[in-house]
Image 1 (cartoon, helix red, strand yellow):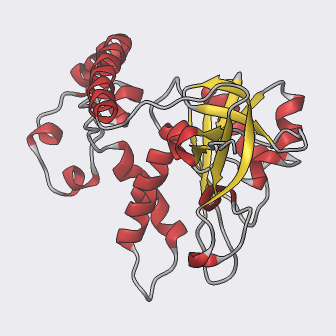
Image 2 (tube, rainbow, N blue to C red):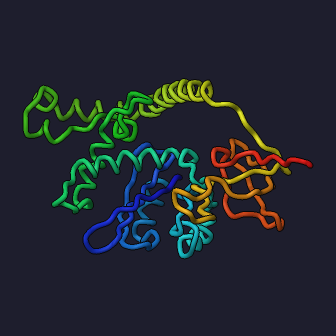
Image 3 (cartoon, helix red, strand yellow):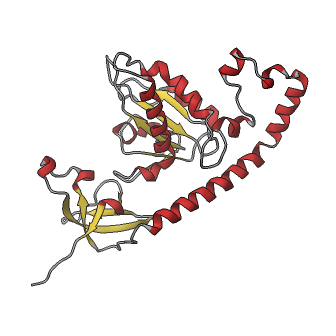
Length: 279
Protein backbone atom coordinates (compact mmCIF):
# COMPACT_ATOMS: atom_id res chain seq x y z
CA UNK A 1 0.00 0.00 0.00
CA UNK A 2 1.30 3.43 -0.92
CA UNK A 3 0.57 6.67 0.89
CA UNK A 4 1.27 10.31 0.17
CA UNK A 5 -0.03 13.79 0.82
CA UNK A 6 -0.91 17.00 -0.98
CA UNK A 7 -0.57 20.21 1.04
CA UNK A 8 -3.48 22.55 0.37
CA UNK A 9 -4.83 25.54 2.25
CA UNK A 10 -8.28 26.90 2.99
CA UNK A 11 -9.34 30.18 4.53
CA UNK A 12 -9.16 28.80 8.08
CA UNK A 13 -6.43 26.22 8.36
CA UNK A 14 -4.12 23.97 6.41
CA UNK A 15 -5.85 20.78 5.29
CA UNK A 16 -3.60 18.08 3.87
CA UNK A 17 -5.15 15.62 1.43
CA UNK A 18 -3.87 12.11 2.05
CA UNK A 19 -4.00 9.73 -0.91
CA UNK A 20 -3.85 5.96 -0.44
CA UNK A 21 -3.31 3.50 -3.30
CA UNK A 22 -3.56 -0.25 -2.70
CA UNK A 23 -1.81 -2.64 -5.06
CA UNK A 24 -4.74 -5.07 -5.00
CA UNK A 25 -7.16 -2.38 -6.20
CA UNK A 26 -6.69 0.34 -8.84
CA UNK A 27 -9.33 2.54 -7.18
CA UNK A 28 -7.65 5.43 -5.34
CA UNK A 29 -8.86 6.40 -1.88
CA UNK A 30 -8.52 10.02 -0.77
CA UNK A 31 -9.06 11.16 2.82
CA UNK A 32 -9.16 14.77 4.00
CA UNK A 33 -7.40 15.54 7.27
CA UNK A 34 -7.47 18.71 9.37
CA UNK A 35 -4.05 19.97 10.45
CA UNK A 36 -1.26 17.42 10.69
CA UNK A 37 -3.20 14.74 12.55
CA UNK A 38 -2.67 11.09 11.62
CA UNK A 39 -5.28 8.85 10.02
CA UNK A 40 -8.36 8.96 12.30
CA UNK A 41 -9.55 5.63 13.73
CA UNK A 42 -12.69 5.41 11.56
CA UNK A 43 -10.72 6.08 8.36
CA UNK A 44 -8.05 3.56 9.36
CA UNK A 45 -10.71 0.92 10.00
CA UNK A 46 -12.32 1.68 6.61
CA UNK A 47 -8.98 1.28 4.81
CA UNK A 48 -8.30 -2.06 6.53
CA UNK A 49 -11.82 -3.37 5.81
CA UNK A 50 -11.64 -2.24 2.17
CA UNK A 51 -8.15 -3.52 1.30
CA UNK A 52 -7.07 -5.79 4.17
CA UNK A 53 -4.10 -5.36 6.49
CA UNK A 54 -1.07 -4.28 4.37
CA UNK A 55 2.34 -5.86 4.89
CA UNK A 56 4.07 -2.54 4.25
CA UNK A 57 3.25 1.11 3.57
CA UNK A 58 5.42 3.17 1.20
CA UNK A 59 5.21 6.89 1.91
CA UNK A 60 7.13 10.12 1.49
CA UNK A 61 9.25 11.62 4.28
CA UNK A 62 6.56 13.88 5.74
CA UNK A 63 6.53 14.27 9.53
CA UNK A 64 2.97 12.96 9.67
CA UNK A 65 4.32 9.60 8.45
CA UNK A 66 7.69 9.52 10.28
CA UNK A 67 6.52 10.56 13.75
CA UNK A 68 4.01 9.29 16.27
CA UNK A 69 1.15 8.53 16.47
CA UNK A 70 1.17 7.18 12.89
CA UNK A 71 4.49 5.42 13.49
CA UNK A 72 3.15 3.83 16.66
CA UNK A 73 -0.04 2.80 14.82
CA UNK A 74 2.04 0.93 12.21
CA UNK A 75 4.15 -0.80 14.88
CA UNK A 76 1.08 -2.04 16.75
CA UNK A 77 -0.33 -3.59 13.56
CA UNK A 78 3.10 -4.98 12.52
CA UNK A 79 3.09 -2.89 9.32
CA UNK A 80 6.52 -2.24 7.84
CA UNK A 81 7.16 1.40 6.93
CA UNK A 82 9.19 2.18 3.80
CA UNK A 83 10.15 5.74 2.89
CA UNK A 84 10.79 7.15 -0.56
CA UNK A 85 14.19 8.66 -1.33
CA UNK A 86 14.40 12.37 -0.54
CA UNK A 87 13.48 14.64 -3.47
CA UNK A 88 12.78 11.65 -5.71
CA UNK A 89 9.00 11.22 -6.18
CA UNK A 90 9.52 8.42 -8.74
CA UNK A 91 10.22 6.09 -5.80
CA UNK A 92 6.56 6.37 -4.85
CA UNK A 93 5.29 6.93 -8.37
CA UNK A 94 1.87 5.30 -7.93
CA UNK A 95 0.73 7.83 -5.34
CA UNK A 96 2.64 10.79 -6.82
CA UNK A 97 0.89 10.30 -10.16
CA UNK A 98 -2.49 10.19 -8.38
CA UNK A 99 -1.48 13.29 -6.39
CA UNK A 100 -0.74 15.22 -9.57
CA UNK A 101 -3.97 14.11 -11.22
CA UNK A 102 -6.11 15.08 -8.22
CA UNK A 103 -4.23 18.35 -7.71
CA UNK A 104 -4.71 19.40 -11.35
CA UNK A 105 -8.38 18.46 -11.22
CA UNK A 106 -9.02 20.46 -8.05
CA UNK A 107 -7.15 23.49 -9.42
CA UNK A 108 -9.18 23.45 -12.63
CA UNK A 109 -12.47 23.61 -10.71
CA UNK A 110 -11.49 26.53 -8.46
CA UNK A 111 -11.11 30.27 -9.09
CA UNK A 112 -9.96 33.26 -7.06
CA UNK A 113 -13.33 33.59 -5.31
CA UNK A 114 -13.82 29.90 -4.51
CA UNK A 115 -11.41 28.11 -2.20
CA UNK A 116 -13.68 25.28 -1.07
CA UNK A 117 -11.59 22.50 -2.63
CA UNK A 118 -13.02 19.90 -0.24
CA UNK A 119 -16.43 20.34 -1.85
CA UNK A 120 -14.88 19.63 -5.25
CA UNK A 121 -12.96 16.53 -4.14
CA UNK A 122 -15.79 14.05 -4.76
CA UNK A 123 -16.24 15.34 -8.34
CA UNK A 124 -12.50 15.12 -9.04
CA UNK A 125 -12.32 11.59 -7.61
CA UNK A 126 -15.25 10.53 -9.81
CA UNK A 127 -13.49 11.95 -12.86
CA UNK A 128 -10.23 10.24 -11.90
CA UNK A 129 -11.91 6.85 -11.44
CA UNK A 130 -13.95 6.94 -14.67
CA UNK A 131 -11.23 8.25 -16.99
CA UNK A 132 -9.42 5.86 -19.33
CA UNK A 133 -5.75 5.57 -18.40
CA UNK A 134 -3.32 5.65 -21.30
CA UNK A 135 -1.03 3.07 -19.65
CA UNK A 136 -3.57 0.21 -19.79
CA UNK A 137 -6.55 1.47 -21.80
CA UNK A 138 -8.99 0.88 -18.91
CA UNK A 139 -10.65 2.96 -16.22
CA UNK A 140 -9.94 2.31 -12.52
CA UNK A 141 -13.68 1.86 -12.00
CA UNK A 142 -13.96 -0.94 -14.56
CA UNK A 143 -10.88 -2.72 -13.17
CA UNK A 144 -12.44 -2.61 -9.69
CA UNK A 145 -16.07 -3.52 -10.42
CA UNK A 146 -15.80 -5.27 -13.80
CA UNK A 147 -17.97 -2.85 -15.77
CA UNK A 148 -18.00 0.81 -16.75
CA UNK A 149 -19.87 3.32 -14.59
CA UNK A 150 -23.08 4.98 -15.70
CA UNK A 151 -22.18 8.67 -15.62
CA UNK A 152 -24.73 11.28 -14.39
CA UNK A 153 -25.14 12.70 -17.91
CA UNK A 154 -26.57 9.34 -19.05
CA UNK A 155 -29.25 9.57 -16.35
CA UNK A 156 -30.37 13.10 -17.23
CA UNK A 157 -30.13 12.55 -20.98
CA UNK A 158 -31.52 9.14 -22.05
CA UNK A 159 -29.10 7.02 -24.08
CA UNK A 160 -29.32 3.59 -25.70
CA UNK A 161 -27.42 2.13 -22.77
CA UNK A 162 -29.95 3.32 -20.18
CA UNK A 163 -33.16 3.04 -22.24
CA UNK A 164 -32.70 -0.42 -23.74
CA UNK A 165 -31.86 -2.19 -20.50
CA UNK A 166 -33.42 -5.39 -19.19
CA UNK A 167 -32.93 -5.62 -15.38
CA UNK A 168 -32.73 -9.43 -15.42
CA UNK A 169 -30.26 -9.67 -18.29
CA UNK A 170 -28.33 -6.71 -16.86
CA UNK A 171 -27.83 -8.51 -13.53
CA UNK A 172 -26.65 -11.63 -15.37
CA UNK A 173 -24.20 -9.56 -17.44
CA UNK A 174 -22.83 -7.91 -14.29
CA UNK A 175 -22.25 -11.33 -12.71
CA UNK A 176 -20.41 -12.51 -15.83
CA UNK A 177 -18.25 -9.38 -15.78
CA UNK A 178 -17.35 -10.06 -12.14
CA UNK A 179 -16.37 -13.64 -13.06
CA UNK A 180 -14.07 -12.32 -15.80
CA UNK A 181 -12.62 -9.41 -13.82
CA UNK A 182 -9.38 -11.21 -12.93
CA UNK A 183 -8.70 -11.91 -16.61
CA UNK A 184 -9.44 -8.27 -17.41
CA UNK A 185 -7.00 -7.13 -14.70
CA UNK A 186 -4.29 -9.48 -16.01
CA UNK A 187 -4.69 -8.09 -19.54
CA UNK A 188 -4.48 -4.54 -18.15
CA UNK A 189 -1.37 -5.48 -16.17
CA UNK A 190 0.28 -6.90 -19.31
CA UNK A 191 -0.56 -3.75 -21.28
CA UNK A 192 0.72 -1.57 -18.43
CA UNK A 193 3.98 -3.55 -18.29
CA UNK A 194 4.47 -3.04 -22.04
CA UNK A 195 3.84 0.69 -21.67
CA UNK A 196 6.25 0.88 -18.74
CA UNK A 197 8.95 -1.00 -20.66
CA UNK A 198 8.56 1.35 -23.62
CA UNK A 199 8.89 4.44 -21.39
CA UNK A 200 11.83 2.92 -19.52
CA UNK A 201 13.63 2.16 -22.77
CA UNK A 202 13.13 5.75 -23.96
CA UNK A 203 14.33 7.16 -20.63
CA UNK A 204 17.39 4.90 -20.41
CA UNK A 205 18.47 5.83 -23.95
CA UNK A 206 18.80 9.46 -22.83
CA UNK A 207 20.48 8.86 -19.46
CA UNK A 208 24.12 8.06 -18.88
CA UNK A 209 24.53 5.16 -16.46
CA UNK A 210 26.21 6.11 -13.18
CA UNK A 211 26.61 4.15 -9.97
CA UNK A 212 28.50 4.35 -6.70
CA UNK A 213 29.91 1.69 -4.43
CA UNK A 214 30.45 1.73 -0.65
CA UNK A 215 33.43 3.91 0.20
CA UNK A 216 32.97 6.36 -2.67
CA UNK A 217 32.84 10.06 -1.81
CA UNK A 218 29.93 12.08 -3.17
CA UNK A 219 28.40 15.54 -3.06
CA UNK A 220 24.72 15.93 -2.16
CA UNK A 221 22.33 18.33 -3.88
CA UNK A 222 21.70 21.28 -1.60
CA UNK A 223 18.31 21.77 -3.25
CA UNK A 224 17.27 18.36 -1.86
CA UNK A 225 19.01 18.46 1.53
CA UNK A 226 18.67 22.20 2.37
CA UNK A 227 21.80 21.80 4.48
CA UNK A 228 23.11 25.26 3.58
CA UNK A 229 21.18 28.49 3.23
CA UNK A 230 22.05 31.06 0.62
CA UNK A 231 19.10 31.34 -1.73
CA UNK A 232 19.88 31.62 -5.43
CA UNK A 233 23.47 32.58 -4.66
CA UNK A 234 24.02 29.58 -2.38
CA UNK A 235 25.96 26.44 -3.33
CA UNK A 236 24.25 23.83 -5.52
CA UNK A 237 26.11 20.95 -3.86
CA UNK A 238 27.26 20.31 -0.29
CA UNK A 239 29.40 17.66 1.35
CA UNK A 240 31.35 15.51 0.76
CA UNK A 241 29.79 12.34 2.17
CA UNK A 242 30.81 8.70 2.06
CA UNK A 243 28.57 6.06 0.51
CA UNK A 244 27.74 3.65 3.33
CA UNK A 245 25.48 1.22 1.51
CA UNK A 246 23.99 0.67 -1.93
CA UNK A 247 20.32 -0.34 -1.69
CA UNK A 248 19.79 -0.90 -5.42
CA UNK A 249 17.81 1.01 -8.06
CA UNK A 250 19.85 4.15 -7.46
CA UNK A 251 19.19 4.44 -3.70
CA UNK A 252 22.08 4.92 -1.28
CA UNK A 253 22.77 5.33 2.43
CA UNK A 254 25.33 8.04 3.26
CA UNK A 255 27.46 8.94 6.27
CA UNK A 256 29.28 12.14 7.16
CA UNK A 257 32.98 12.69 7.86
CA UNK A 258 32.46 11.66 11.51
CA UNK A 259 31.08 8.29 10.46
CA UNK A 260 27.47 9.09 11.43
CA UNK A 261 24.91 7.61 9.05
CA UNK A 262 22.52 10.16 7.57
CA UNK A 263 18.77 9.61 8.02
CA UNK A 264 16.72 8.45 5.04
CA UNK A 265 17.94 7.25 1.66
CA UNK A 266 19.26 9.42 -1.18
CA UNK A 267 18.74 8.82 -4.87
CA UNK A 268 21.57 8.99 -7.37
CA UNK A 269 19.91 11.91 -9.18
CA UNK A 270 20.71 14.05 -6.12
CA UNK A 271 24.33 12.85 -5.78
CA UNK A 272 27.51 13.75 -7.64
CA UNK A 273 30.95 12.13 -7.63
CA UNK A 274 33.52 13.82 -5.38
CA UNK A 275 37.04 13.68 -6.77
CA UNK A 276 40.07 13.87 -4.48
CA UNK A 277 43.06 15.56 -6.11
CA UNK A 278 46.39 14.44 -4.71
CA UNK A 279 49.13 17.07 -4.60
